[in-house]
Image (tube, rainbow, N blue to C red; front, side, top):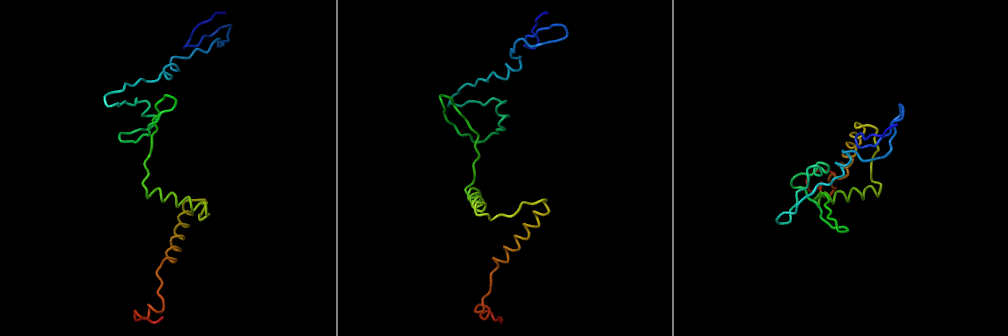
Length: 142
C-alpha cells in the first residue's frame, strides 16, 4: 500500500482499489475560490472584473444599486421601470386580484382567438351610441 497526491487529492492504493484519504482542494477549486482584487481609482471608481460582469450580464450604461452591509460594499444590478409601465403593471395586478382574466389556453391559436373575441367585445361596448335626440338633430330617423 502506498499514498500519492494526484490532482490535489491524497489517495491510497491497496491492490486494485483507490480510495481518498483526504479532500485537499484541486487547483481548479482553489482558482475559482480566489476573489479578484480591484483598486479604487481617482474619483473612487473601480473596474468590475470580466468574470463577474459576464456572470451578471452587465453592459456599459447598466444601473447598479450601491450599499454597505457589515463593512462590505454591495452592488446590485437594477432595472429602471418607466412610470407608464409601472402603472400598467399595477393595473394588471389589480385585474388579477379581481379575477378579470381569461385563460388558461391549450395553444397559441386558442389564445389568439380569445384575444380577438375579447377585443371585438370591447369595441362593441366602447362604440359611441347615438341617442334618439342626437339622431334627429343629425337628420336621421331613430
